[in-house]
Image 1 (cartoon, rainbow, N blue to C red):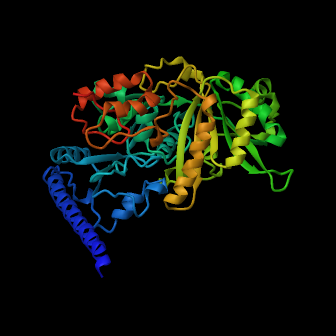
Image 2 (cartoon, rainbow, N blue to C red):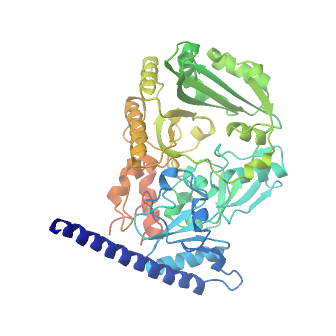
Image 3 (cartoon, one colour):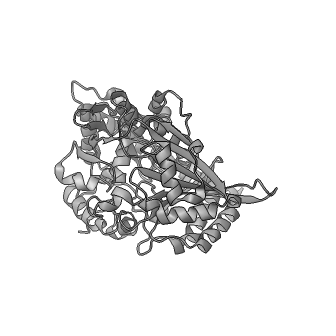
Length: 507
């Protein structure tokens, strides 16, 4: 019996600590809810926007924008409250109350948050969810649109197509990405104004808007597109000369006409020529702002090894090209883009930038490493074009001239739990390590919107400039210090923060 007493004591202590923690959370929730109600605008009651764990809809609201199932496990920390703001005054109330009680606020607009930074924290926190604030006002006469931060890219694309078949907007290929996170972190889209104080504008066009405040809406420039665009998807394996084609692509992709984009998706599949053997497959995905005849001519001049023919091409409208790129049947009703539900998988993403063509021997070495690992996929997105014509200091997004393409490491799996996560994340890190000789250095650059906490994290309390610099330089290069100075000026108490936000200067 004596040997069991320490276990009983420990269990009792843990139970007591859990009880105290639960009571503290309950008291915090009660106080915070009352503050929200006290600060509610009479014309816009806030009560129906408040969801606590006692509300039957709490779980569905929390999970509605979670794409990465790694952060939807039973052991994942959950917010003590979700505020689904219905009006600007609700956002203001959230900030007032959170600042009063020094409570961590997470800002969520869409859910394509690879590391869960908008809805997970190690300290008690609540989520300000913007998904109800998703109005879109398209003005074809000025070729602009106001879009609220809670809208998705699919909703934006669809609303533009309702007004015009010769206008579009250059952004991501996945329609369930949230506009707020995309524009705030991407920094290379055609954004001309936002409903916020002007001095912040430079910082939030690529610096991660959630480091500086809550952006309610963006004004964007629409771009003109032809009535007919052309897409194609052509896959080649190593046995079908994929290495030669990739080698041609990497020397010309960043120099092709500005109206042609060709992405590579590289994965491992079963060989069609040898049983029980794996091979690398490269899928060439393209969008061309023109007809198939001209596209084939450009391709045969620049990447003849692909052997593209008009039969490989599909001529369609710009809005239907969005469906094509999202693996939706191209003849589907376009209102499918209004579906906000993301695909659900366990995932890990990483990113890199390539500044010099990879030697052919290097490509062959990479293929062998991929065959050994079998996961992840690699996605090569070419740069150049108009991006290379913009100064790296024009926005916080610095990855412009000098980059041939961006790499996204894509690993998905279906098993829950830490063991599976550690296994697949480990494979992703291993391939990332193999790629070291072929990518940018000093710093090894990374894309903010492919969040990767492997690059470093900061604490949720008083964040360290030294810790923030570790990931900040990789995301922003020389622009990091300017972001820190702006952050220190506009948010000296570091209220708007997450694990990879911009830190303030030390006191």
